[in-house]
Length: 471
Image (cartoon, rainbow, N blue to C red):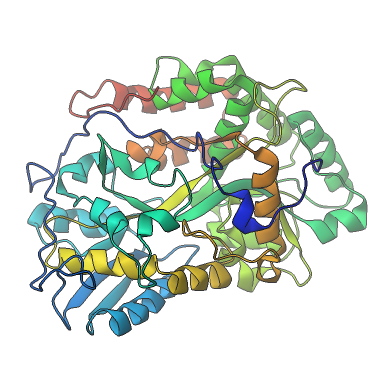
């Protein structure tokens, strides 16, 4: 996402400080550019009486409107949780609407003051948090409530998972999925050819030579996921250059993309692009079609992604593929963070708008999702763990990818890191253009650097956006 550490059961390896350093609580207020509430509304009024069994006061037999991002995890896991909720919460039901273009579809509803009760604000077209921060209900009461099994929810979660959703000391975003970012490959293909997973960009280039000799490419990409390679590059640069790199990017510093560690990664990637080791045509290929070229056709050897990739491609993965994750590449033999260091964080951000018609219902559906029943169902059917502890067996439900996530995090120890600036400031759409051009071989490292710095500087110099200082 190496092997000298003893094997541990998944329920053990994430205890304690597993997520130490995964993301810092965000300090400072974010600007709200949309119309609506002038401050965070913490009301959970739902028309029912609050009690231990009904902590948010949701009205019996009321309905919850949930808009759920229809991406790698699909949406039926929320339908499952809604079924759990209906049995436990006085017949409260949910209408789950799959959605892809979150910002385009829901921003007008925030402006009009009639957003859904629960939103999975995920994907490339998520709403920038800075535009809706003042219209989000606080979710601390969800953590303080008991789950359906009778245990305080806060006590059932892995350490540190609330940090990415805490803004200015207020818990506003519940990130439901524990995401591991890795360089994914087919273990069966590598074993059959005697290939070794590369650790450095130079080793990746050498593997590209071997791949070409077999009529294969090293990498493949799709137009909507070109920034997966930015994620790989940032992780690689942080491992090479340490916290100095992460903080420069997070804080939108001048010339942050020109840091030596970042440049060395870009140059390593450019060498691979210029050698023709990226499959051509990615800028015109839909991203899951491109991913299928890797997982089903095996045209390429490696693919950088979050741990949602196995579930996303389960219908388009070759039999006996044995999908496995490896740590993201480093540049040199002496990086600031070890090769085993991992980019991992709690992801899939759920929010409850404070002006929704059924705020209490939105929170109740989150409560259902955090039950052991619903969380186990997610891990088993999506082959990715949630933030709820104790839901994944040691055999990973038979998934090599899920087992490898356990191994990656075990080997990383406390060397786990993440960043928030891309999502926080809504940069991804602009960055996609720059990265598609670069991966197509149509721009230089200098042009890539300038393009990314221009996007960063635009946000940094925009006085209407209150910046979040990360330290």
